[in-house]
Image (cartoon, rainbow over all chains, first blue to last red; front, side, top):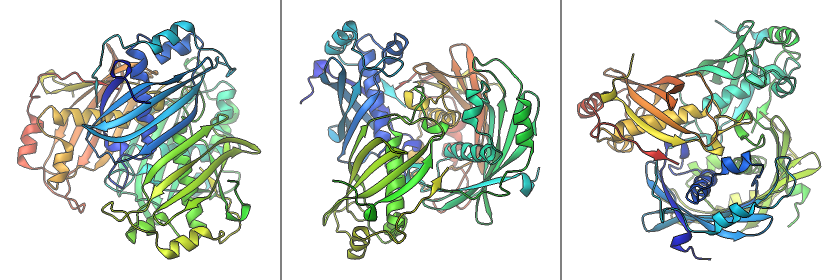
Length: 147
Length: 147
Length: 147
Length: 147
């Protein structure tokens, strides 16, 4: 599944000392944090926000995560996190992510989310959100420099 | 304020790769996580638990934290976190902490906590908890190997 | 691939406030930290340690991680992390993990690791380590209470 | 010590789910991560970078940290981290920080750093860096939206 640039949102972030480990590179678990940064930007770029979604009673708990680590990311490097919709079902959403440094892909992966209410019961994605997620970004390509 | 061994609870933990940073040692922010490990052990050693406290409507949000870093802690090293009561007022609690590797003190510091209800309104420490915190540990010295 | 109890190492840990997020449960990225706790215990139970391995010039950077989240883990709960060898090749190792609360499986997954030298060049697993990883634990089943 | 706007660097960041805890707000230990974001921006705004500093053999390990928590910060909120020079000695540097949400100060504090070489031996701050840290930002006020 190749990302379509119209339907991809890219956000930049700079690697903190806090993100690195003794190997001098980003700790493998922190990529899931970076994926969250990407998802959050993807939704905001489509006029939504995960916070608002929860306040309206819809939750998207992660039910599966996968990361392929290809090259390591060093301290203070600027990374680009690209996010696109991998799959959108009635009761689940899959976000696909890639993390690049310039032209190099450092990591890629995905997170799969169930749709539930506040009590954790399975639910359906509100139609309005589904349409927003499927559509292009309000701005074609946002470029937010994140620390 | 020197710790009194009867009133001090010590817990061991092993440094994870996740805790380290590019300098090869524990990231400075992670000591506040270690302090939490210490507080939690201190309360459990006195027959209480912070989880139970919250379920009964009392919260202890941190209002001040302080750390003096003396020596660095490396990956896979076993650390001892000692916690004792620094101060107990009607509306606040201060926990004092030291982090050692054998006989060496690596860091020391404290966390000061307000007492509130679930809505964040100032409250008072339940008398039963106050007595438990002031008393000695159920076991004199617990030695829990963490991670 | 079902774990064989002789070849599985289980370690306990207690969920910290630091591990939780606004949903009141362990943040999805922190499971990769828990997997590290499991791998580390697995190696130590076989007379080895990852720290020693690195000091002898062998590194095991993670090249793939996967987590299936089945049930959420709450604050202060005691979890059991079980780790076993998923696959052992000349140039890679796969560790399989499950995270349980009593009889309930909360999450499972794996991490795949390349074998490299300090400069990141592909290498081979030292024969002695390979034998140790394939063998049973020195103690049949270690039960270390963490934090 | 009041910040002087010419000598203060402010950077924005958005609170991640990863930063929050069960209380629904930013975990107290993560403020030290936010302080790092501030320090890093402060140095970059003056034409330097901590990464470059280390590559030239000067390290600034934290020897003391202090945080006063006044109000909590919620998920997805935009925070402003302001950093200024608290003190600059031959062998140490102190950065002062405040974290605001609009006009509200949520937290303030400082980090004190020793100056060492790669081996951890005490050193002196390179004169060029000292001048850069004492001077105003290259751009008067940078406003970088993070995550």
